[in-house]
Structures are given as C-alpha cells and as structure tokens.
Image 1 (cartoon, rainbow, N blue to C red):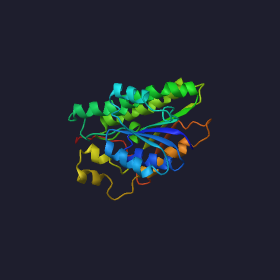
Image 2 (cartoon, helix red, strand yellow; image 1 turned 45 degrees about the horizontal axis):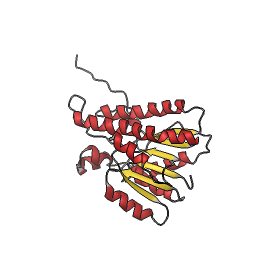
Image 3 (cartoon, rainbow, N blue to C red; image 1 turned 60 degrees about the vertical axis):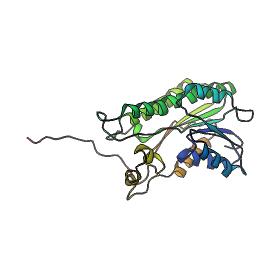
Image 4 (cartoon, rainbow, N blue to C red; image 1 turned 180 degrees about the vertical axis):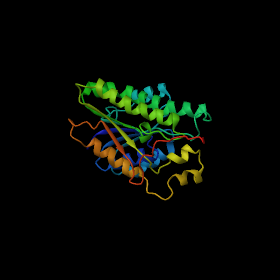
Length: 254
C-alpha cells in the first residue's frame, strides 16, 4: 500500500493506532475514527510530518452518524481504498446466566452492527471504482469458545462468517475481504473488559508473552500488501504462549 486512502475504526489505541502508524510510513492518507477526540488529535500530531491524517470522532454504533460521516468525507479522503473494521470490545467474563444484558447489547451494537454500518456505507464506492479492500478484525474467540466468552465470541463468529459472505457477494469485482482473528493480545482490551480493573487486566498476561498491537498491525499491513489478485480470506494468529484447551467434561461422583 502506498499513496492510498485508508479508514481505520477504533483508531484511538491498540491495533487501530498501531495500524495507522505502520500505514503512515508509506505516505498513505489516513482517516482515523474513534469515539475519543484527544487520542485522535495526538495521533494526527504524531504523524503530521509524514502523512495527511483526518481525525473523525465517531461512534460506529450510531447508524445515522456513520452514514453522515461517510457522506461528508472531504475531497482527498472520500475514496476509501482500505477499510479496517477494528472497532470492537469485550465486556465482562461472567457466565451467560449472570452476564449483563447492557454489556451484551454494547458488544452486539459495536462488534456486529457498527462493523456492518461502516461496511455498507463504504462498499458501494469500492464496487463502483472496482477496487478496494475490507479487513475485519475478528478473534480466535469466534472459533474457539471459552468460559465467559458467550456473546463476545458470538459477535466474532459473526465477523468471520460475514466476511466470507461478503467475499461471495463481491465475486466478479476486484474488492477484497479479509478476516484477521488474533488471539490474546496486550492492549486496552482487558482493561475495557474488566471496566478499568488494572489488577484483573494484568493477570490475563502474567507469565507469558502475548501478541502486541504492533504484531497485529504488521499482519494487517502484510495482508493489504498482497497482489491485487490475491485475497487472504481468513488469518488466525496466536502468541506462541497460547493454544487451545482440551474439551471440558463435567463429572459427578458415582
């Protein structure tokens, strides 16, 4: 990717901010979107000597706001070559029977609805220009369940299947679709999941080396750099310190 226009959601931290930095190295124009303005302005200032950066305060859960934001992108930023659907979160780790319905709503609204809103608003332009790439950030939780993953894992399973169905709809065009599914990665993810509890968040990564935001950003960049006839459908990545657990069996005493 060089000299392209790239829109990244969830760009205020983590994978999104790291992806913005790596794409800036080649002079790509960036639209960085998130709910928090201050981190976006800081990112814009950091990258200003290398690339044009348009901060976009946006809550992807708000359909009308997404539609208005995409429609009002200024000249030079309106023809998006790459959409990185990165905005997403997990909330809570309680079993389903104890989980918060408000948390479930927030995860569905962000991880599913927000991703579909962004995609639907930008996809017609990509198809009309017969070029473009949508990279959806999924999770290993979309394929491999774990206790307390309930709705979060369900939303990421949606991301994986939606990505495949998108590619099927786009057959015959030069618009590519990729789902990247990272495993455990040390970003703000666990702090958000545990609602600011630093001790709980820190314990997730104790004694191991998880993925970093920069690791995942490098993978996003690599996928986008493939020749235009190459579509990476799905890429799952874990730290070497993570693997799948055995099947759980509940046993009762005879």
